[in-house]
Image 1 (cartoon, rainbow, N blue to C red):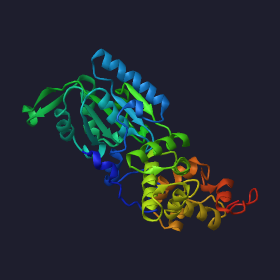
Image 2 (image 1 turned 180 degrees about the horizontal axis):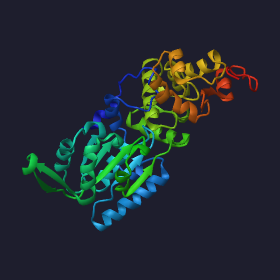
Image 3 (image 1 turned 180 degrees about the vertical axis):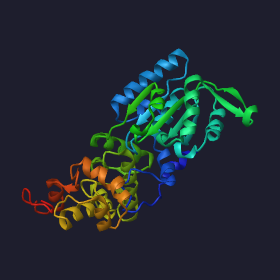
Length: 353
């Protein structure tokens, strides 16, 4: 649990390589916990999902029943875990946290399910990575609120039904397409979280600065929001780094000058690109004439693993229009050349044209 002083425990040190990564370490999750909103009315952004979820929860509370099972999908860092905590608070239930990779067999899942009380919320992160054998047990638990426990082996084995109190499963996934159809169909409500607008991120940063007892100016909040890739987790991380800079090298006030100086130290540019992002763009634009270039070749040229380039750098570069994926590999757009201050190649003047 995070106590009320956890809001000040923000001395985790993210290096410039992963400061704009949407993933989070254990220490960072602990720091985030103190900044999370406690009620749905405090949650910023995701208007559609928030409105739909509010309706589902209010109706369930009015009927005196547990809400339908909830599936939340979307990129990491957008608030899926926060929403699960809010759901538990709204229905006055306890939150039990686990993850798909942690449940390797039906016995692991049975142990978690047997500890649930009525109205509890079971949050399963990365539910698409749940073991197939455990999925079969989860189907029955979600639909009939019971699990069948096998006792004994061979011809003498018997199945003992174990009733469960009504509870709500909240599943979170970054890859909804990997969920089996039978599992996906058992969720009564599915919400897809989108990236946040800059004004929403600026509001989140401003609210969290108060919790961190930081004096944040409006211009600095907008500057941090503009470099956060539309992701609250990154915005909170950058806020802590700006606060560090202001305390150590500045006046203690988080103004525009402090924000720009801190983000320059951590190599986050005006478009939210970090060192790896720029290295990928520079390799495509300068070494390969704008591409197309294969993923493995590109990864070797920047000294990273292909998986790192594909999962960490490429999604944001493609989303922002710096890179395009073609059948022959990755190619840079005119926007990438302009961002790096390089002349764009003439039409058709590429490496393999």
